[in-house]
Length: 445
Image 1 (cartoon, rainbow, N blue to C red):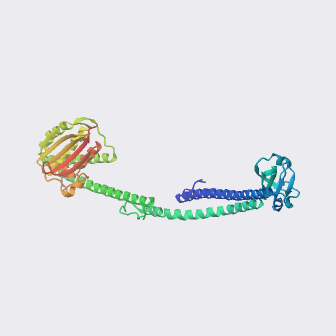
Image 2: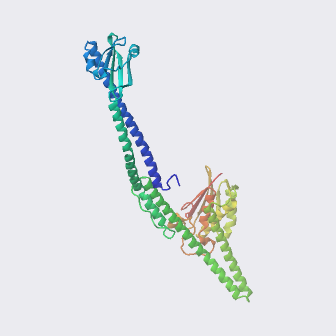
Image 3: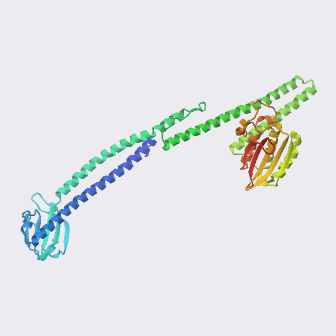
């Protein structure tokens, strides 16, 4: 058997009931002790007042006051009984040695022989003027009976109060956890086919309401992520379908014209171009997948970004029909040269695809970072594309275009490589050439 209940409601009820029971029992014990102390204090105060009154009366010569008291005796200094209450005719409250040894006042417990048995009593003995000793007693049977009745009442009331606390605690916990049960039931009903489902709103500002809002926000983010993944799969399928269809068509054409070597060679060259496009597209998708999974491996080495940009400008300019200008100052960073060449190449290809004629790469050193600014004289980013320029398959023209530049993965790769280096990237339009401006910031170390 499990020593602790598995249900949160049962555990909360158990803890709250045990805690409340312990506090209740402790309170009842303190209440009992306090009431008993008050009764004893009242008894002692009564003894002190009676002793004072009798001492005053006997000092003034009124020995009858002692005889009128229910339980009192007056002794001479040598222990001789001078007088006392009729109820104590055969009983001495103090023995002769006790009388002689008493110096001040003394409060004691004792038992008085009575017809119905020994009577528990509280006794005050004090020395008064003329060397005499006064002893005053009071029965504590009533106090003991009151203590016993109080203990019985508290003993019987404790279980009832604990039961009431348990019921109230169960009702409060059930009401507090009702939204949790509702959230659990609604969350269990959500499937991958129903990602638009929202959790019910929990009113208030307590922890459960905050949990409901947090879970609802998490579902919203998951819904956005799932929609993006679905869009990514759709776009990737579309991009892969076109070259595969073209490749199949070229191969079928080559088979149909097997007796014409020129046509076969032309078809094979076209097929090779489509294979190269497929290879580039799959490499880009693999890079993005690795970056998303956190497994993109970089070979860190000291690299002068100005030299790297100059070398890429000389290589890319003629190939893309673009005049690439490089300006700035030498800036050495720790990075992966091959990946950084891919960043510059994708920025140049993006400018060439936008019909720009000039691309200016500017290297600037800053405190702890190096900035690579790529600005062209093209039309710039469409207004609706600035917020999603770095998303996968994001393009200004919704029409599907052929060629590697038409896949819409160039800036996504720029972002992935930059983030993998611990940097950031942003897109805009305007100065210095009036077209698109992409700013890449990389840390120095």
